[in-house]
Image 1 (cartoon, rainbow, N blue to C red):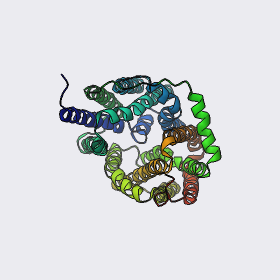
Image 2: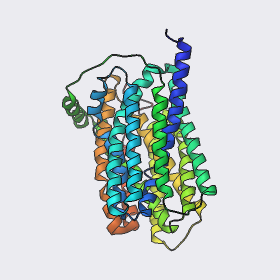
Image 3: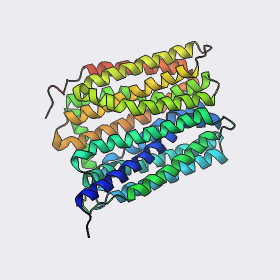
Image 4: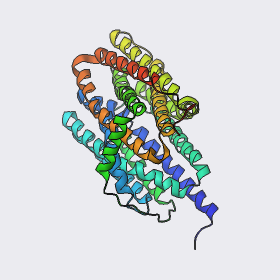
Length: 414
């Protein structure tokens, strides 16, 4: 006997929301911009290896997206893919923690990066199947509310962990960062269990053997559409915003003499930024996604210049609160670039080709992110001073390219 439609959606809403709480908390506990750089520092991994963190974390789930989308379409119940992906992510993070705990050094760091890549590739399947599951199991008027609930609950939980780390945990051992990874693996398992509780009916399936045809079509869009090409160039430069976050963390870690109290402060600052930034940027992006990218990109460039200044006067020590403010602002700026980018592309692209435009954009962005590995080499041999000067210039170039994009909220393509 089928449950009443009202109960069906209520059960799915709660299961999805609390699964989101667990997965968002897990993401923050293994934050590639904060936790993993501190982890690498604590187990004596060279600075250049930190240049691999964000590229591997981001590129693995974006570069093969077109191919992954075609694979997901073959399954009538999409929640199973997300559950299996969540379990796979839990296992990947578990191995990351074990290698950091028992091996350490450059070998341990390499093994952590390998399983970070496996985490990212598995995540790609989950992220694609999530949207289909959402559409099938949550009523249309409740989807935005659900997404906001997932982000808010996860952010509040992460904030609670941050406050506990700052005020109730003493830095008796560098293994605290490894314990955070164990916690992330645990909460990914919880997220999988809760997502499995979603009631989903079997849906239609599609079999596509035209993956490379889709890739070629996406490249054709890039070649023929001037606005899309400018958008990709601008966002390629602004990819430096997300790539810069681990280096902000490493710089702060260096200037604070690896203080665990400082780690607690920037962890809290990052959690607060993630709670409040997306709704605010979302509001402005609906008004003008182009100006949202410009404003947030300019903020990121200013903060990169601040980091350049901090590197130049490296003998100056700030208090933990100021380091927290710096991390808060750069995370808010990153959220603005991401929200503006997603909103601009979705609002601009023609509806019948939107999915392919998005997949093409994500794939190219993933490739650009891989090239960002070179920033790790630059940091290792050129130092933070040269690194942040390059970041600042590239961010400014990205903002200037966004100025050349049309204002699509006033004159959308559709």
